[in-house]
Length: 328
View (cartoon, rainbow, N blue to C red):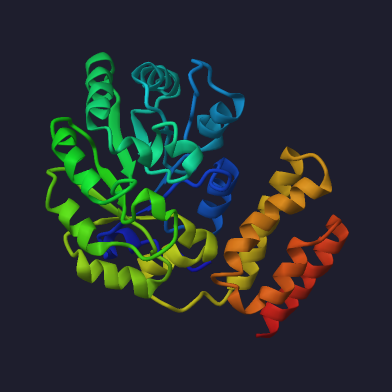
C-alpha cells in the first residue's frame, strides 16, 4: 500500500470521517482504516434513544473498545433531551470515552420534524438548556456536528453566541442548510460568516470529493486545519490518503487493495446478515457511491452487481469488474 509514514508531519491537516448512518459502522471503519488510511479520527453513527433510557445492542456493539482498537473513534448522539444526553454520557464513559459529539446536522424530515438534527438549530434556548445540564452534571467533552440551519443560514448565527458560552471542543459545520438535504451547492459565504462569528475551533464539512476540491476549499479557508469527509470517502476510498500525500495519482496497487477491502466487508456482512438478498443489498449501498465516484467508468457492470439475485451471480460480475479494472 502507498502510505507515507511521515504524512502527519509533512502536512499540517487533520482529516475526519463524518458519520453516515448505515455505512460507517465499526466493520467499515476497521476495513477502511486498514486498507486506505488517511483518516485521523472517525465519528460513529449516532446513538438515538427516542425517549427510552435504553441503549440498543447495535449501538453498544459499534463503540465497544474491542471493535475499535486500531483507530480513534468518537461516539455521537442525536437528541433534544438533556436526560437522554446525560444517560448516554454515562454509558460511553464506562468504556473510557471522554468526548461525545452532538448531531445537529441530520437533514432528513423524519428527524427534523421531531426537533432533532438540523431541526433543533432553530431552538437556541433548548440547546442552551441541554448544554447547561450536560456541563453541570458531567465532565464529558462536547463537540458538535451541525448544518448552518434548517430553513436558512441565519439560524446558526443566532445559536453561535449561545454556543460560545460553553467549552465546546469544536464545531464541525456542513456548509448547507438542512432542507437542501445533499442537493445544490455548499454555501461558502455563509460558512465564512459562521467562521467569523464564533470563538470555537471550526471544522469544515461538505462536498470534499477530490483532491482538487479540497485544495480549492483550503485556499478559501486557509486558517482551517480540520476537514471532515463523509460521502467523499465512500465514493473514493483512496481520497483521504491522496489528500494527505498531496497527489492526484492513484497507487499502483489500487485495484488489489480495493478488492481486499471489498472482500473484508463482504465477509463481515456475511457473518452479520441473514440471507443472500440482505448481503447483496448491503454491499449494493456501497457500490452506489462508488459508481458515482472512483468507479464512474464502470457503471454498467456495477449496476449488474447491485441487481444480482444470488451471491454466485454477484461473484461473476465482481470478476468481470476486476478484469475490466486490471485491463484499463
